[in-house]
Length: 155
Image 1: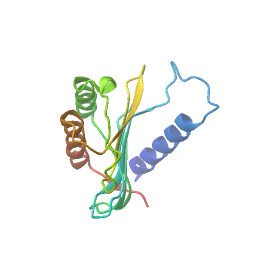
Image 2: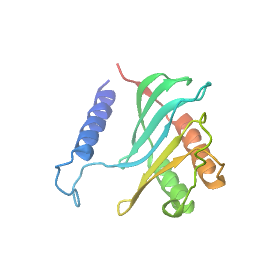
Image 3: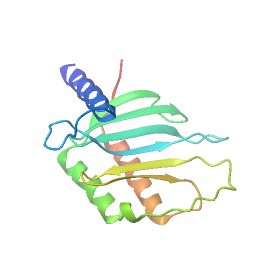
Image 4: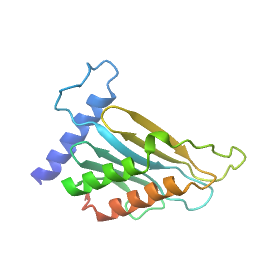
């Protein structure tokens, strides 16, 4: 039970520290930053709607909103190997050079947002159509990572 409370506290402190607009620069700080997130939006059908977030210390959160097995907020963590694999996958994808031209004529597709912060650069991608093999690979990798984590539901 203490681990669950520790994970919740770490996540909340990190979230508020990172999102505070007036916070001083965190260089050299011990605050764990958001390094990756995957968010999916709704569609007219049964598209899964959730947000998956990873902090630099490996602490993760998952918030399932609709059409997913896990509804609500969950916390978990990546071990050092999983965290290294995620960073390697993002690096190998050449994430910062992905340039998408989404088709604005398609209206009923879910949007997938991916964000990556490698410590010196950050980028957010908005993706829905047409298909992109690299981004689909990152999404698939993320789904497998989500399945591999032992999640604890927030009370």
